[in-house]
Image 1 (cartoon, chains in turn yellow, green):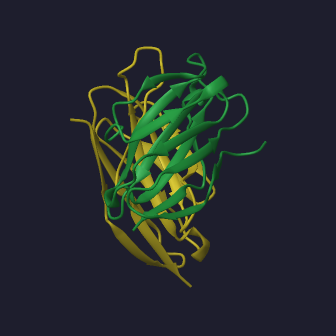
Image 2 (cartoon, one colour):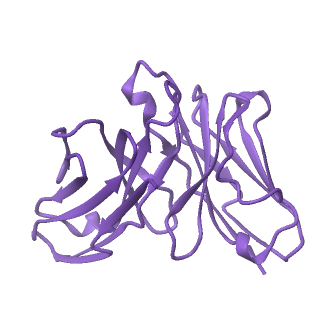
Length: 114
Length: 118
């Protein structure tokens, strides 16, 4: 069964204290791994897509990496405005050339204190 | 470019009543998805449209849920009759749908509709 597990469930950091969030996945065939940011009362906001092991993407203080079993979201020198829930999702190669649904983890709630 | 919009943002109904949720995808996006987050759980897939056709409805919980996408533009999700366990946040997402373009796999989400069944 395809599955996504995120850890930790919650993470508290001081401003400037770098850390990483983990996303472990099992999927029959990976088409893509997605990272989203979600603020309270809002929908998930797209951050990155990673398609193959070894791939890395960066956006401001965030850097996402991918291996064959997991992905990391590294946060360098975080600021209070980085506080949010970070969601990881995978899309499997079920549908040939068509596009399938995302399978989500429960998310990591990040709090950054000034 | 306007994002995915959903209406209403909140709905409170009594058990047994009917509710219809609406989603307007990003213009030009052929793929439209419905997801749901029940309290304490992860976001889960409900169904997927490609234009006006249902590509996959394997996540629909039961036949009290009916989704339509007439004309391949906006979509509605009707719950009839609503039960207590239907409470949650319903998200809609859309993507372009051009397999030769990797960016077309990116799904963009709306703000969600919070449904409370009492």
